[in-house]
Image (tube, rainbow, N blue to C red; front, side):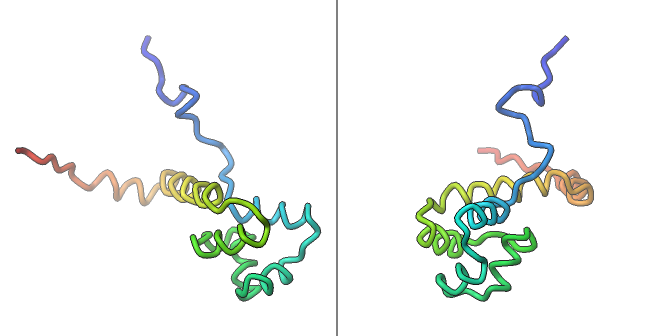
Length: 110
């Protein structure tokens, strides 16, 4: 009986995907800072910030840096979370997976 690579701790995928906007939203609520106040402070439209916090838009590097500066948190972990969210979302998209399977593998021969 062989081992199932999906059961190795480093290969486990979360059942629930966490968007960085959810983490930022929780942080704002904990600190008692409104979305509008943060948006004004960092110079972005409140609607743009709201879309990120409500997982309707991905977190950009620029926005992560702005939020990080305002809240004194590192941007890199937020961006890593966004990348993980993007990859897991793609892996769970059945139509994308079918498209991926149709692409032939190309091996470079030297």
